[in-house]
Length: 448
Image (cartoon, rainbow, N blue to C red; front, side, top):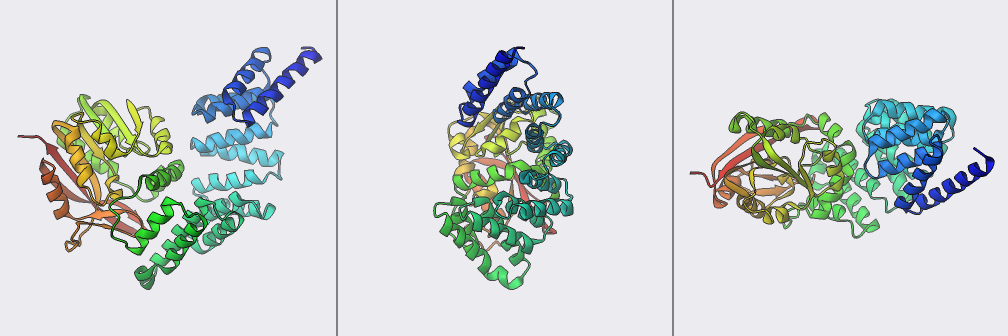
C-alpha cells in the first residue's frame, strides 16, 4: 500500500473517531467498515468497530473484533482495556482480570485500570486484593471519584462498613450529585445502625444520610422514597415506578451474584410449585413472568410455555434477560398498565419477588385475574408480615420493601375472584445471617 493510500486511510480513521466521539455511531460504523474493506488488518478500525458493537448490545462481535485488533498489535493497550471492560460486563471475570493486568504492564500509570481491577477482584470475591487495587488507584489519583466509589464498594462487600463510608463520603465531596455514592453510603450506614438495638428505633444517622442526599439532589425519587420508608411513613401504598427502575438498573450488573450470596430461593420455590401443580411440561401455555428481572425464572417456566413473555420496568435487567435467549418476548413496562392492556391473555402468571414493592395489592391482583384465561393460574411470592394486628394488612419497612399478612392476602384473592387459594410459608433468602420468611401464594381464576 502506498504512503498516499495509507495517509488517506488514516485521515478517514481520524474522521471516524471524531464522529464516534460526537455520538454519530452510524456514520462512524460505516467509515470503520470502509477502512477494513481497504485494509482488513487496521487495528484501530477493528477495535472501535468492536466498541460500537458492544455499545449496541453485540458483545460477542465486540470480543471477536477486539481480539483480532490485539492479535495484530499485541501492545494495543486501549483495545486490551476495552476488551477487559467487555469481559467484565459479560461476567467473564478471569479474562477481564488478565486484560487489566496486561494493561498495567504496558501502562503502569493508567489509574482507571487499577480501579477496574478492583471491581473484577471484588466480583471474584478476592476482597483484600480488590481493596489493594482500589487503594492504589486512589493513591495515584486522590481526586478520582470512581476510584473512591469502587474502593468503597469493595470495603462494603467485605463488610468493613466504616471504611466504606469514608470512601463514599470522599466521592460525594468530589461530586455532591453522584447518586451511586449517596445510595451506597446510606445502605452502609443503615447496615451499621441495624446492628444496634437503639438505632433500630430511630435510624438517626440513616435518616440524616438520606436527607443529605435530598439536599444535594432534591428531585431524587429513590432518596425521597427511602427516607419515607425509614421514617415509617404510612401513606405510601407502593414504590414509585422511577424508584423501581432506578434501583434495578443499578443492580443489574451484579444482581445474580448478589442474590447467590443471599441464598436466594424464590425461583426455586416458584419452580417447585409449577412442577407440582402443572405436572409434566407440555410447552402449551401462554406464560407471563411479571417483573422478570434478569430472567432467573425463565429456565423453570420455558418447558411449560408455548409463548413466554417477560415484563419489567428496568431496561438494564431486560438486557440480562434477553441474553438467556429463553423469552419469546421481553417488554419494558409497568405491570399494572401492562396487565390492563392484556385481558384474558395468559394461562399462567408468575410474580417472583415482585410484589414486595407493592403495599396495596388490590389493583394488581384484580388486573391479574382479568389477564388470566379461564382456569388460569397465578403464583407469587411476598414477604410474610406476622403481625395480624396490622389493620391495612401490609407494612413498608425501612429497607424499602413491603410485607403482607395472610388474612389480607386470603381476603384479597377471594375478592378478585380466585379459588383454590394456597399460602405456603417458606424461607426466601438470608440477610445478615437471618432467614427472611415469606409466603408462596397460588390460586386459580374461573375454575369450577
